[in-house]
Image 1 (cartoon, rainbow, N blue to C red):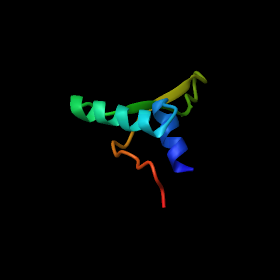
Image 2: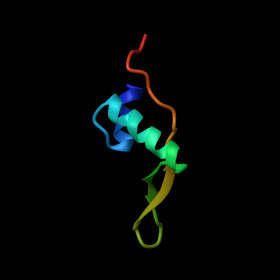
Image 3: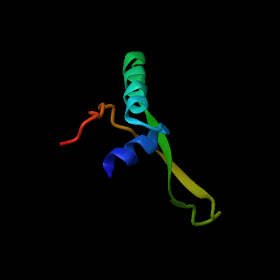
Length: 64
């Protein structure tokens, strides 16, 4: 489910922790990112990474 993937990206265990982390980031004016592997360098074989932006929208506790 999308909710579990979003919580996993921030490393939180529940919706309350997710919403709290989002609120703190918005209050500080920071953008949340995470590092994701996009492939390997053809010459060295070393992994290549990029920064992925994380959406700053809170999640509701009840999903209908």
